Image (cartoon, rainbow, N blue to C red):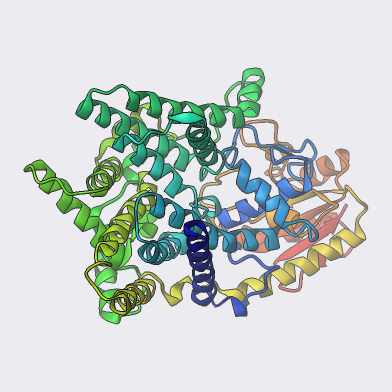
Length: 562
């Protein structure tokens, strides 16, 4: 009866989270075959999704980086997200459409996050009604919408409650290893964290928090079981992570390290850190104008940067402040009951790692790849909302059932309204217009060129993480995203052999001669990316190439047949 009862509440949490996402994003205005975002890292994610759908795996792609192709071993940005890539491939079955798969995956993360958060909150002892409310609030935090499809794999934070639970269980001395079933469950949860790692951020944070939890438990009890349990969790996460990175490790062993790609520095741990105000102040563009103006005045002097999604919302902020009180009370010998002290310890540790000038800087000195410590805010949000869930549950026996349920409805409604904004609605019409224009233009090119024809793209842009590029970079990849049978010069790995890097900057006569020599079928010029230089380059190409060029409807692209 209890399992069936919980299953109904879990289903309700999933449904409410999905409905909440649909309403907040106004999805009835969206075209599911057009991405919700199509600039910067959202375009990079679409590259990775299409790559994973069209090829055996995402690490090699013959249609980018022509003539040699793209190898992503130097940039294993989603190697720790094997489960998410598999889900994306499943969602693409029947359509093969990367934009549709990405949209469906993003929407799936809302009910999936609510489900897992509900199950973990129940495991921590929360009342089913309070767990329902707080799991939905957790699925609808600003972090989810602001990461969005731009940071698609960070928005898939459904494993964070699992990672948080493992750290809390180690800290509390839960018998994670007693009996075969618990041992297998613990290993399974650690594997889950490792294969849906948010570009390794969530698995890295899980390892750090579990290590701290094990050490704190050992210092408090002198019992080595916590070290064994923590060691098992950390060992499984690291082993599975290394297994996923095996292709990159093997590639680097043969070809050497490529320091031109994804080079991280210790100082970035400060740049991408977190401030208390970013957790507690209201979100940007709040529904209440006075609160929106308050935040605007603050951010005018202290821009949020990557920490903009860290806002907890009023309910989460209340939970976090309560955990700070619990932590301070413990210092003077007043220990709270139940899970609150453990939640407080993990919240405080997370904040000490993430805050400006915090412990994360010292970790970054040894491991600079984990630089964006502000992303620990989603762990802090879970600890805070777990405290709220436990606190609300404590009221159940003191209030009449209708009053208790009414209170929870009010908390849920006000919490969702406080955490969300009309600013989260994507620019559906503008994105749809551009997407369809590009679709029509590149479809025309596919019909006029033979299969596997190679096209030079101008201007040249490095890959990945281009500096100061148009719209955050990756714009040349739109040609690949809107075609299936052509090969594009853009996308060869920076620091490795790159045909386009050696020829694209040459004068047009040399460029045309080199492209013909290496059997390219045409040249695609992006007027928008060239800016003021476009008329001169285009004029020279028109003089050199007699066939009339093909111009896109929006007049952005000009294609010259060689």
